[in-house]
Length: 531
View 1 (cartoon, one colour):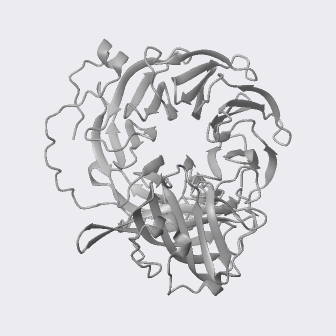
View 2 (view 1 turned 135 degrees about the vertical axis):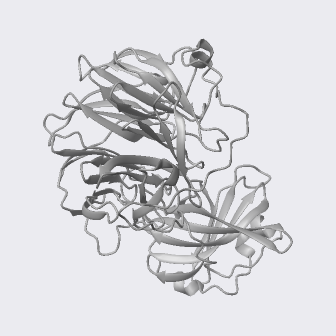
View 3 (view 1 turned 90 degrees about the horizontal axis):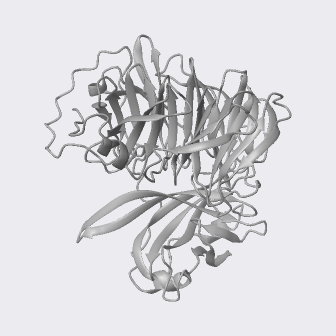
């Protein structure tokens, strides 16, 4: 299937407006893919989440009390006494929520959601689904926590978790209510687990932490290393502003902060890359920001691109003389010529027709563009010709395709792909034939956590795995990824930790200097020796 455009490649209307130029003609039916002829066994694709069934037998709550005074709800099947030994002091719990909603009489729809709640040092709730707590009762006769009101009439998107049975001091199950404006929206059950390190796992295995630097940005998100410097970008998550922080890392044991760059408004700089003396930053307000690295410790801002219209860019990827910039609002992957690195020239863009999501990450390899298009799945486009042409697509239940890395193994092209949602993990795909992509392997840890970014260097895959920290995999046999090193960066006691899914190790680079550079959302820049 091909994405066609009525616009010439360099037509002014395409370069300036960046509007989707896809055909409105209906797509032809998908052909039946040929049988897989690769060397590995094809694995079934079950998706990110498989319905485990109800965690508890939760009564259908339809009265106004369900949202307005949830503490009065009758829960006869709960063993509240079993919850008395739950660890709460300073604890962060992640929750797998199984919502149920009646779409029509007798027909119940089930869908998953990730959740979380955080307790202070005294064991009282300080955050519930990222919201302020409203009320809490936690004793031998009752366990419920409820998020706070946002209006006098009710609680917009208010959540109540009612604990029922503990499976130990760090895990329990119960019932959950999701209300909007005082009216019950969804109900369901949940299981929750404290986000300590995996049972029996040490802080580190085969990774030595050389140094750690707090980053003076709201939430660090990504890092790039070049010219002996680490360039860390951050996003505005709590209102204190993102931006760019620069570190001299010529001595990895003692990084030296050189400068911090902010533009005076709440920055959302989520991605960073470099080529020669050009540094590229993904800005949610101004597209691609270009800095001159003639003086590596003091980047000089030049201008933003495309420059003639406000375009948001979320992530970046550079391969050869091409810069790929992913724009959520435009739902496009913008492609620039960077033969002159400090003067990018917009060439074209890739747009997926009938899009439900948008491009989050992309990886260019051997004439193909591999795009994580969130709800639309994992897309493969050919880069020959004037306009990238869609060659294939891979989807799975509860798709939220987020990041990838591609290489050649045993003469075949293999992609490592991951999402960013409940249970997201590394799946291994044989993409040699884009029209017949198959799953051949996977690597997953706890189903309550999510991977984020990944980086392939030779036969090693480096993964920033949020709550699971840094994971290094031997993928010489891609069908059987094998962990060879890890470091648990996530600690509940770190400042600014949250109950959210996207907390922990978020960005990673392995520039070839014998070091691993990791960004953690709370701890900042961490530098490790390669294993």
